[in-house]
Image (tube, rainbow, N blue to C red):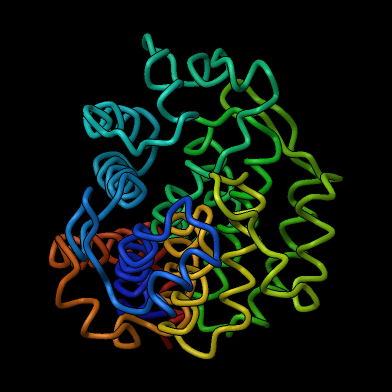
Amino acid sequence: MNASRFRGTLLGLACGDALGAPAQHLSGEEVRRTWGILQDMVGTDRAAAGEWSSRSITVFAAVQGILSDPYDPVRGIGTRLLRVAEGRADLDKTTRAALRGYHGDWPRAAKATPLALGGQGTGSGSLGRVVAVSLAYGETERMLSSAARVSAITHWDTAVESCCGALALCLHSALRGRDARQALRTASARARAWASSRNPSEDTPGCQPLRQSLWLPLSRLADISYRDLLPSGAAASASDCLLSALWCWLHGDNAEETIVLAANLGGDAATVASLAGALAGATYGAESLPERWLSVLMHRRELERAAEQLFALRCFLNPVQQAAESA
């Protein structure tokens, strides 16, 4: 494990977000008609080329919250989410509802949202925050429990918690140098076993170990076709976004190809491309990302600095493990 993979993870996430944002809510056919292949960052009437959306902004808030108190980051992350949410029209509805309902108790706010009460809080808005958790914590159980708690700040749903665990374990394996196929095989088996043992707690909803919309497609990901991924035109569930990002990671030959595949899906393109970008950056390192993207990416230095801080935190929290992995 090295610092380049940490930088690559955050930079890849932001590059995917910025590249995919113009294709958000378009169908794959509309993306093709507009750009042919969307492979360069372009501006829109809402954002300049290389600008982050709320997806990267909330991830950066999670990074800052973890760095402020790595032993119990929930309050720090929640406080920063409240700050960055002001005036953000592109914030996902589940996160927005939980933030509006917050009155001093994060789990209560998430549980009380109409989406959670109606069993519809399955959106993908908390998945990006798991990227920050995966970088900070090297010990597996601590990483998984932290991912569940950080997700539940806004998303009180068993399927979302399952997705967060699967994503965290994939990133965990990629950061340790496994390629996408090896990492996915290891992570999916471990995630399923972990989900089977997860019960609700005061601050997490627990997992759904038998939810076929995640576990069955995950085991057959290599056999799914590109055209059968993420439904186009609307925001998708956490499982749709995660499976699409993992497919692009598995089938892309390098970081650029992985992110381009994800951005050109349309639908929830920015979310899928940001997750695929984080996975690709963790696998291939910061040097694998095209300079033509990085040169226009906003707040690049802040991301690189945050990645270095998370790498230092990981070494501090897990000195023996880090020394073994770096040997």
